[in-house]
Image (cartoon, rainbow, N blue to C red; front, side):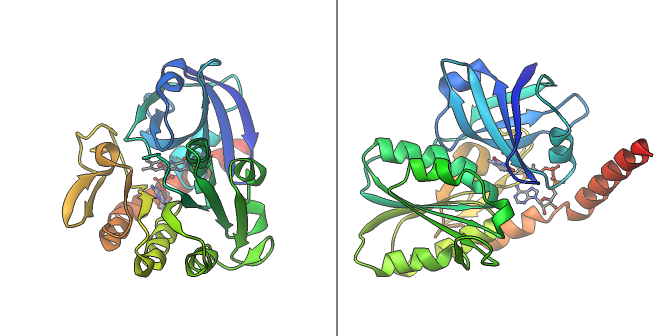
Length: 280
Ligand SMILES: Cc1cc2nc3c(=O)[nH]c(=O)nc-3n(C[C@H](O)[C@H](O)[C@H](O)COP(=O)(O)OP(=O)(O)OC[C@H]3O[C@@H](n4cnc5c(N)ncnc54)[C@H](O)[C@@H]3O)c2cc1C
Ligand code: FES
């Protein structure tokens, strides 16, 4: 069992847990994830390592409540235990001294981008971070991201904080400027990663995205995380989750993410109804 040592609500829908998981913390690298299962009846969900401390033996996860499993996870408090916390899984993000790297973080994607930006900076890269969210109340870890970046640009879709608009606009402006960008790394909703890739393609700047496919085992056995990259079938859990954004077939990613939409909605509605009835 894996004990939740700390719990923090970062926004009304985004939450942080610090979990005691010495085995994961020992081998953790930026870009990797864990498969979490709350109890024997729960489904297995992938969550990226947002931070870790090898000395303390702790791992930080940040999750957004979007459905049944994240709802159930959000019902836990400090002191509670999680049954399975398997990892680190997936290939780490490729880190070397590239030069200037733009790190694009969309929504809850800020959490996984933080250790990536930190690792890039430690290798001597100039890191320009672009953090975007729908509105001000969904912005978190701005200071943390700034602390590992040479420059941070914040955007909100509705203009309630930072610059009004979407992340692709500042990314395009930087690429059009005299700044010689060696690489772009984007983590967040698929639509954001798709359009970031479309933005960088004409500039021929290598663009890495972290695909958030549906996963079950996370070890390459079930095939449910399959994606098409450069016309070749890949498993996001073992071949990724990082891939060349210019080579990803985004239509397949979107279609596969929608596979269980109806069942997911039904389950989430039921879950909330049971909770509401219990309160009566
Ligand atoms: C490698 C990897 C790392 C991830 N890291 C994080 C993380 O650090 N923090 C975090 O909050 N989430 C992360 N995710 C996504 C997370 O696993 C899903 O949000 C979670 O499984 C949803 O489970 P649920 O039962 O709560 O919702 P579900 O019932 O499964 O889904 C509810 C709705 O949420 C949306 N949704 C579900 N899964 C995804 C997805 N993978 N991508 C986009 N939209 C989705 C869909 O609209 C869906 O209908 C990651 C996914 C992968 C593959
Ligand atoms: S999650 Fe099963 S093969 Fe990737």
